[in-house]
Length: 94
Image 1 (cartoon, rainbow, N blue to C red):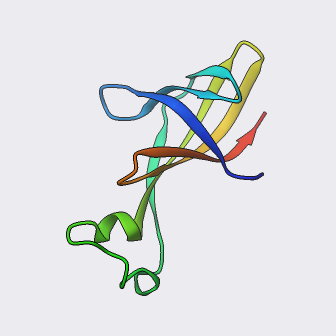
Image 2: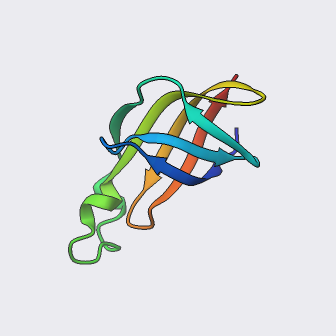
């Protein structure tokens, strides 16, 4: 799957995705999201880091969850990109 954007991401009180828009549909989280951090090779980004932003280049917040819309239920793997605060869908299987 080509990486796509999730927009309008709303978070619950714990900071987990509760809902988002994808392909023109609203998806509501239907399972407890699981968070982990993916790491890249720090030396590939060493020259790009601004002061205070190094962690955001090395660690990426990832989420796995089930979410449903009016057309179906999907398993998603989301990537939260900081400092841009953008959300990308790495995987969506129904």
